[in-house]
Every structure is written in C-alpha cells, then in structure tokens.
Length: 281
Length: 324
Image (cartoon, rainbow over the protein chains, first blue to last red):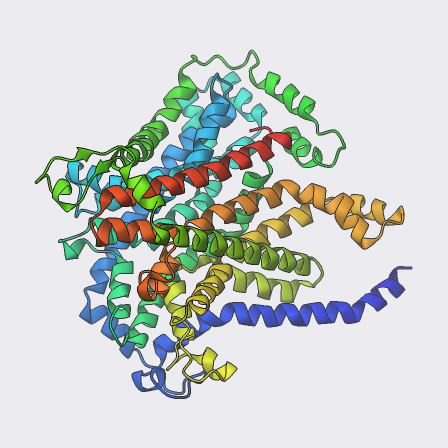
C-alpha cells in the first residue's frame, strides 16, 4: 500500500514544495530589497531601471544616516527605552503569572479576565489622557514618558503568555522544595525563575518589538527635547521630505530591523511553543 | 506533566474533560500549600498598580475628557474646561466624515483579517505537506516578515511600490502609476503590508496546532474510510477551533487599530483624509487640530467596539469549556 501511495503523491509534493519556495521568495523580497537598497550607491537607488543586485555596494547611505541626524543617540535612546520596558515588564509579569497559575484564590478568574481585556485596549486611543498624565507627572520630554505607557501596554499580553510557561513547571517540584524547607521567596526566585526564564525571554520579544516600533508616543510626548528622540522619528526625518532620501530611509530601516530580527531568530522556537501554550490553555 | 496531557487530549474527547482539570485543581489547593491568603495578591500588586495607574485611570480620563469642551486653551490651562455632556458625541454622530471613516475602518479591518487568516491557514496546511528544506525556507522568510517593525515595513513597502524608483511597477509594467493617489489602491497597498507582516503569526500557530494532532487519530480516521474533507471537518477543524478562535480575535483587534501603517504609508491619512481609519482620525482630531474632547470621544467609540469583540471572545472561550 504505502509505496504506491507515496508514488502517487510525489508530483503533488513537488508542486507543493516549489510553490512553498516561490512564496518564501516573495515574502522575503521586501527585506532583501531593503538591505539591497541600503547598500546601493545613490545613483542606483534613484535609477530608472531598478535591478535586484548591485555591482558596487557602498556604505554611503549608512554613513549619511549616522552622521547627519544624531542617529547614534536615537539608537541608544531606543535601546534604553526598549530594554527598560522588557526587564521591568518581565519581572512584574513573572510575579503576576505565578499568582494566577500557582495559587487558587477568590477573584482569580476576574483578574485573568482583567488581563485579557486590558490586552485589547487600543494604545493609540489613550494617547490623549496619557499625554496629560505625563505632563502632570512632569515626565513629558523624558524617556520615562515612553517607558511608562509601554510598560502598561505590554504587561497584560506578557502575563497571558507567561501563564503557559509557569504552569508547565510540575507541582511536585514545588512540593519537594517545601519539604526540603525552602521558603516561598526562595522557591520563587531560585527555582521557579530560572526554569521559566527561557519563556520569559520569548515573551519579551513582544514587549521589545512594540516598544521598539513606537513612534506615536515618541512623536506626541517628546516635543521639545530632540536629544530624547527615538529611532522611528529619525527614520521619518528621512522619509517625510518631498523627495524622500530612499537610500537613507532603507539604511535606517535596516539598522532598525536587524536587532529585532536577531532577537526573533534567537527565540523563535520558544516563541512558537509559548504561543501554543497561550493559545491552548 | 499530567496537566499538560489532559489539556492536549481534552478537545479530542466528545465530552471535554473539565472533571480532569477539576481534579488537578483540588490537588493544587492541598495541604502542602501553607501560604497566607494574601500571598497571591502580593505577587499581583505591581501588575495591578501599573495597569490601574497607566491603563484604567487613563481610560477613565479619556471618558471624562470626551464630555468636555477641551481644546488648546483648556489644555494649556488658559481657560477652564467646560462640561458639555454628550455634545462631542452628537457632533461626531452628525458628522458624515465620521461615518465614512467608521465604515472604512470596519471594511479595511475585515479585509485584513480575512486576508491574513486565509494566507496564514493555507500556508500552515502547505507546511505540513512538504519536506524539511522548503519548510525551513518558508518559515525563515515568514519569521523575517514577522520580526520587521511596522514602521520599517511601511517604509519598505512604500518604496517597493514607488512610482519612480520602485521595482513593483517596473515588474507589473504599470509605468508611473501612483498607488497612494487613489483611495482604493492606497488601501490595497496598506492591506498588502498588513497581511505580509501578520500572516506569519497565524501560520506558525496553526501549523503548531496541526502538528499537535496525534497521528493515530488521523490514521484511525482514514482507516475508517473517512475522506480528506471528512477528516478536515470532523477531526481537524474541531481540534483547531480554540487556536483559530484566538488568532481570529487577535487579528480583529490588531487590524481594527492599525495606526502606523496607515499613518506612514498614506502620509497621515491619505489625500484629503481619504484613507483615514478611526485610530488615525482620533489622533488627527486631537493633536493636529487640538480638539482633544472630540478626539477622546472617537477613542471611546473605539474602546467600546473592541470591548464588544472581547466579550464575544470571552463567550467563545467559555462555550469551549476552556479553563482560564
């Protein structure tokens, strides 16, 4: 039975594989074009006949980006904001996820539903009250005004996704720890935390990417302190002109995309299992 | 570990097994745990403080501002804000542009959701039919699209479709056709970008879901003489239902509040605001024309719509007998 069946399926499988490869090329093409255009010399980027290769790669666009617009500073700002959000939200989410998965208490389901609903809130709709809140807080124009909102927006999803990872740690381990005389705090930080850490990293991708991405808050909250701007604003400086500097835009886009890409590739396996967990439970 | 097994197996059983889950639940509250009753609340405290202060309070403020006449003068403290009840809302409901934008938002989000799900699910099925190397290629490409920040994705797609220097018009022989000039083609361009960056999540989760279906179940079904269609309808679809619900709801929520792509790709809402969606509309009202009260009212409308979607989601979860 078997061999004949696979023989019949063979042409189908070849067709499926060819179309998969073709789709992969189409999906990857925008990224390829971005990197390619970043390395093309200015004349080729603005050429009449765009070709999918370059014979004289140059770093001019990157040089322009880093020299003209204080880009390095913006890059550092973006990193500082994103890392602050990632670290703080990971710690808070870890505690919250532990509370809702390893304890049974009144209102537990209510708290979970709260996190779920909070996850749906459209960030942008809250720009106006956030603006006034940050102003009254005296945080306007500072990096703190970018960290705080993103903390609030990435936390619910982080808790939701971390649940699966915290749940996966067997109860017996916890019981054993108590029998061995470990305190609750000790169990939390010395046993549970290291076990959940990989999941924590995977979860952080989402906090990282949404913070890294943001230009709405940067645009609205950093009004007259250019040195506290972040990357997306710098990118838009190249983009917003009548005739955009495409080479510069593509080089800046490349610089902005690479860190996220590295982060993603490094954690993608756990990401998939984490999403599976968040989806299944 | 037994907990995980029941979670995976329960959708397969005709009667979902809340009893098994319930058994685990009782064990959890067993004698070993001797923590004070407030311990979970202590752990929840930081999260609740952040959400309360930076999410719940701003939502309350949003509702409040939407009831006031609130413009630049009030924002800078020059004039006191005057309470005017639902005047902002009635202004909104009487404005034909608002209805136009609302309709555009719903249609655009709907198209994006359907496009994303169709592409994501069919590629997930495709992934199960091919060998490791092409699968890896497709996975990596999708991962790249997934990781691309919305803002760089937007600039790259605009460049790809640029009438003067972009390769797409060259390949399709469209000359210097401008994609952002007409309303529909501008929306189409944004649609392509949104589907491109959001299908990978659907593809990867659905693929993981299909892989999680035990091979024996599928084999048993085909031994019993079930057709491919029957296997999909009676075995795979019910087992994938929870996953499909989550990705659908997430897509609805994400696509309904698309901001970056519209803002960057159509230059803040298109020519004469033809490509505005609610989110961008609220932003423009508030920050470009300083009508904070009106902008807040639009924000409240958005919140209510998304709250409705969330309630549907919760009901679906309940009906599925999912344990939260």
